[in-house]
Image (cartoon, rainbow, N blue to C red):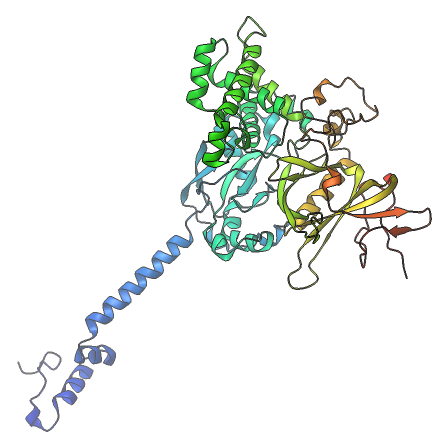
Length: 537
């Protein structure tokens, strides 16, 4: 049609210009972008559109996955106050979306609290705590008994009220690189879960005053998990009595011998006794040598304790009676309520070649003191109140060196009073030192005094489990001697590879291997003894 400039066909090639030029000039007159004309000419418009659309979808998917909450990952219980996380709380405020998201807050047992939280990326521990306490019906009187933890098999951190769990989850790998020796592969696969469990700063004296059955049940579940996992070392009579109490709470009292035996075999001993006791290794050869007989002995002892519980009263027990009895027995363990850290200590030189190595240990720190425990043997190596030790933390001096927590305490060498030094190698030494310092400050301010008084001044680092509750000494009484040296709760200082110093009245001289400098510049209670000083010259 005439006059239809925009809709006309391109001129024929015979008109003195190429078809390529004609297309360009025609499209230009029609005001089409040259880039799309070029794409049409070379038949790449469709592939280009597919590429751009795919790129856009990929970017949108990455943003969605980045903003997804990582708090709903199941993990093992296992512990640890977060004193060095103030450097990790900065975040982008644009992530605080008002959209509600599902969050699972795990309890120590097999259950979890399901919450629907708005702005999960910016919600604080304090705000989240109100929702959890409401869901669990925890009274205000016990609101300080629990705290939020970020837990994984590699690291445990107790959060402060101002912390925002989601943001710390996003930076979890940075924390693992800083506070663990885990490999890059393990770190890349590790994810934390948000857990609601006992507050390490909650005194045991206040715990004894709790009457709410639900709160006692939560505390019992956590204590039971720690007993079964071997995290709380205890003697046979202690874990047998605790296992019988768990058996009675789960199946009730008054069962006859036949029913009780059948129920125990159905549930299996591992449900009531520590794993290293009831399900110890050894393989087929161990089984052929009489493992079955040992299991029968454990069953017999457990059922005997159960019969004692059943015959204590003719009337059914109160709902909280066994819960309180279980927790009361756990309170006799010095490390109940501790936050746990992983580390290593030097082994004493052994053999003709005097070969030495390192031993893996758990370091438990509570409001009362510090406890070093052998992970493999499940017993205490060293237990000290804060008034019995001095401590410091040293940073690595060179490549291959490790963070070290130094513990100084009184000891003897051939009858001579000495000061001993124990080195604990751990990337978590910074956390341990911070927790010790904070607990000492609480004690000095009188906030931790109530928890200490309930122990009747009996040295928890030396008293066997199950016997602290039988002490009738009043406050201010003298510490008792070791009642049973073979108890797993007793310190085994003689098995430690320590550095010893002696005070000759003027200065402190070295007895065993020399050290270039001392790290000790502070003490929990200065009047206890003199701080270590290195002789000059």
